[in-house]
Image (cartoon, rainbow, N blue to C red; front, side, top):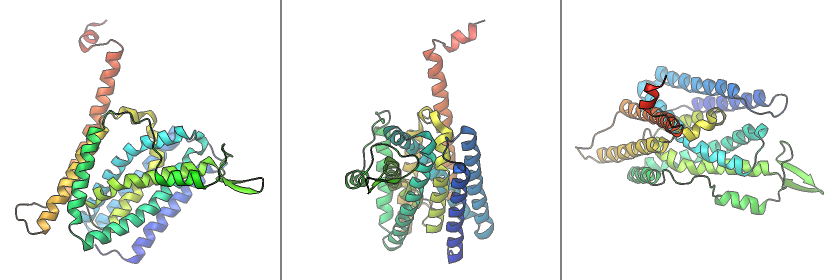
Length: 330
């Protein structure tokens, strides 16, 4: 799909305007704790925005690009849900006050969006020049899916600092305590950063590491850089509000890792099959986008429903209530 410069400009400017409006509305009157009701409104708004964008693609350029966008958006959003648990660990480790958590997530996501944009540009150019990278991406996604299954149920309460964060903590003079919503302050005439900036670096760079999985995954659904960037941008924009909306629900999605493993495995196999098909292998089929979208959507629905059923059943058993006992009470 040939995308004119004005379309790229319109999307990027539109995203900046929406995010600026988000920050102005939320922080108007000073930082405050993000409420569950407020989070629900914003999550609904960003999902609606993504749906409208997809419908616009359908009307302007056809169902195939629109289907690719929706498949990519759902995939990126699903992978982001798993990332939220790590964000929660970071916030807890750095004891970020709740009134500042929204701003931390916003700046961290903006950093990630900028870095992902560069990553997407490099990835699109590389795939256009080196077709064999489809095999590499496909095998990497399958390997990642296997690792997710192997690590399921392991202790995830530890957060390992990445190299960028370690460098920032070592090289940047920083205060021990938070200073309101400031990210830098002057102490005895010397400029120092506050822990708030360190946390923003942690969120942004950690999200970039997550892109090592998500970017190859969406390239398995479409190689159009415009759609890849748009799907990532819309998924990231709603990530902050989703963090506050889900809250304790994150720990209830006990089968989430299995669902993500299925999605990554499917996309990995799809990449390899399409690479074989492009190389002239007659038996290798092309997987249509409607099938990809259906498998991704059904997998996430099954993952969510079965997770909630298990949590409910475990809760009943922990209270000593069995199905037979509950049926004979009264």
